[in-house]
Every structure is written in structure tokens, then in C-alpha cells.
Amino acid sequence: MSDVSDRIDRLVKNNDIVLFMKGTALFPQCGFSSRAVAILDHLGVRFETVDVLQDAEIRQGIKDYSDWPTVPQLYVKGEFLGGSDIMMEMFEAGELQRLLEEKQVARA
Amino acid sequence: MAMAADQIESLIREGIPDARVEIVDLAGDGDHYEARVVAESFRGLPLVRQHQRVYQALGGRMGTELHALKLSTAAPE
Image 1: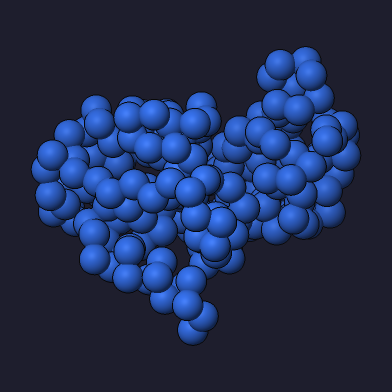
Image 2: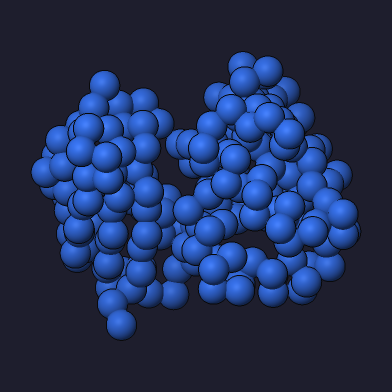
């Protein structure tokens, strides 16, 4: 395993929820990332963010790691859930709330 | 760089032969699209796998040539 996928591996396994995004939770740098943060905030869960704009290695590495071409990307308990479209669709259907409860993630 | 709607549609159809594809140009600027893709071969796949199949059909253009593509996928009802 390469260094970067090792780093990503540790991030997604050591945190209940990790959002790889552009910018930070307070200052998202892209509309899709901003929407992803808003959903997680609304659900009241604790989540780590990784700003890919500050880390070129992860910016490319996360695309390979997840086999997913864009950011944001959401991981819950080590499992890749998808990008902001999937988050929104699951949220609107009540499925994201259900999944986070099932996985017993930490609350904010 | 932008892509034409019919180019996106034909790439998805080539990659997913059983797909029904609908493309909406969201902003009228040739750069922000929504794609709705319905395919029998999606049945039973989690959303993340369905979206991955569309991205694979687009062959690396997503996130480069194609900046914003809102995606919704499903199996036929």
C-alpha cells in the first residue's frame, strides 16, 4: 500500500465520520462541499474534515482510494458512502439519518 | 473546458448499454449539468456503485472536462 492510501486508511478508520472536502467546515471553498457540511451539521453528528486543497497528495490520492472522481467524499466508519448528490438523496429520503443511527456514530 | 450534453449522453449510453439517460443543462453554460440515469443493471446495486458505473462510462472526464454533473441514478420502477 502506498503512503498516501495508508494515510487515508488511517483517517477513515480512526474517525467515525470523515468528510474529504474543499476548504474547512467553517469556510467551505465549493458549493458541493458546503452542502455536504450543511447536511452533517443539520444531523448533529461529530465529523472530521480533510481539506484537500491543503494537501495535494490526498487531493489525488482520495480519488484513487475511493474510485471516485470528485470531492466532497463521505466516509462513515471506514465505509465510502459517496459524494454530495448521494448524501442529499439519502438525507431527503431519511436514509442517512437511519444509517448514522445504525452505525452509532458520535454526536456533535 | 465544457462538454456538450449529447456527448455526455452518448458516453453514458456506450458504457451502460441498458441505460435511459436524460441530461439537463442546469445553467445554460455547457458546464453545469444534471444527468438522470435509469438502468436495469443498477438493480440491487448501492447508489455509490451506480454512480461509479456512470463515472466509469465518462472515462476520467468527470472532475476535469466536466466540472459539475449532478447525478441521480436508479433501477426502473
